[in-house]
Length: 127
Image (cartoon, rainbow, N blue to C red):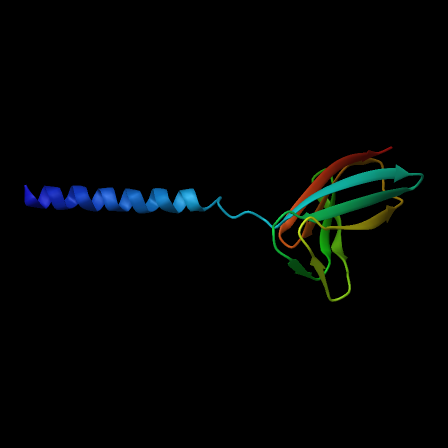
């Protein structure tokens, strides 16, 4: 009987540890929230992205935004949009920048922009 009680307690402890680990995985909230908008102008596609500090503290971001441009789920271009050294965003403050893609082939595209571990995306079509 004592051996069975020890086994049950061990199982309860293991299951509790697993469940507590699962519940903590989504509790991290980013300090930034973002948006991205694409405008097709003649032969260019202009991507404008904005990131806003939604926290109650100053956020310092080092480096520029990284991007991936995909067509039919295949990477067409990826890189970074550099900024000088670092940017401090006060609570509620926004940072906006642009990236222009020229002479894209006709098709369906997706743009993903990442800045300080926050990712924003948009889909667009070139005719």
